[in-house]
Image (cartoon, rainbow, N blue to C red; front, side, top):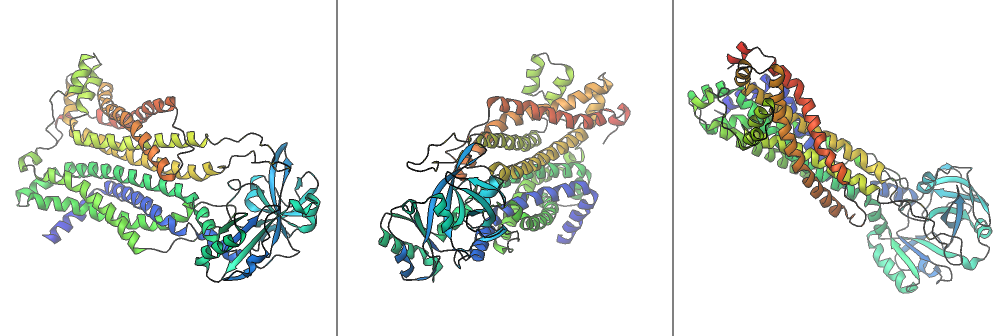
Length: 597
């Protein structure tokens, strides 16, 4: 019986290639999204690690303000093996296009030091009167070698651009520049206005926290101390939002894919009603028929899972945040059998569940009912049909409303997949509204006794939109595709089941246009339900995503008018897609429709 089940299952795949291809695509997309969400964390720290290794970064960094405690003693702490040496650091400001920005200048020698060695990617090492700018800071302000920065006491020429590492500008302010001690003297002649900074390399990098604690005991509360572990965690924070988005979309895709699969299984049963009836008549039990349908869908899903996991690993670097302050790592993560098995288990279990329920329901029907399928139609008057009749709606609308819930389960599955699409749209509108919350601040007062503004007149979340929009809108498109696939499958199945009814409607006087209107009206009812359910669902998903991403201090809900436009928008889209299919069904001659089996 096992060989017979496999033979019948694979025979069914060949006969319904389009349906089989759609199943593989839907499963592959869902598997790929989950794979990316799980794998992205494995490459989150690679840009930082590459930058840290290339620059021979410091494991512990200590900074003291002007007039603070000297940092020379830190070079001799237990566990310290190398150091940048104590460097002067000062804060100033410069004017660019009529706005005042801060600038942190760190003193360097005539050549790069061995520890925390900047990587010059454009231009050259700074000479007197010049400044080497950190890349994210320079890119944000479109500064290049040869540009000038007008400070209060001196005009600095940009000698080059370098990758230094650390949190990118404008999240980290003020911008960083490297200059010789002579240049610092031109900008701030009084050395009492200078602070100090030192970077330490330690023998046991994971134990950098103990060295930092020892440094804190030496310096007391008069200096700031950080470790490379803290810096690495900060560098990977930007991927947390991407991971949350991928996880939420992965869950939505799984639900939408399950709804599509259940609908496609219904089409499989409808297309092979006589074959299933004959199999039952020859002795197959309901369990064996169910096993046949589940085997076919799992075989297709297995192909989709393998393709999705492979594509997910290859595409994972595309979803990693590109930081202008780091050296990016584009290599794909190593395949992890545990994560792959987890994705495969979740997706295949969902496919089996959504296939088993409709398959078992169909298999338990009597042979006579199965052989008569395609003729019988639920002609009972639904509550919705009665309501539409009472409102005096046109005949096509009334007929469509009565037919929209003939197969309640299929209608609800279609409404669910479309509602998930609407929910994704609502969450996207929420993202756009939240991006507008972080506006550019006004002019900041200067630090007392200095020329450095307390903050720069820039949005510290600048660039977030460019990182998030491609991901969100691409998954919106995928969800829309899955939802429309379910709609098309439902419309085709409904049309197939109601061919005789449509012929009868035409025989009693309805025009092809009215028949088309009845079929489109039935799908419009589904679209309205999807819109009404999808809006609050989308708001809930958006709020959940904000909470998981830790952005509760800076978000906004979408405007009420944009939410109102979503419902008619999905209705118009569904009607536009359903109309050509309905016209094709309505064009069938009456005699052919009445003879349809």
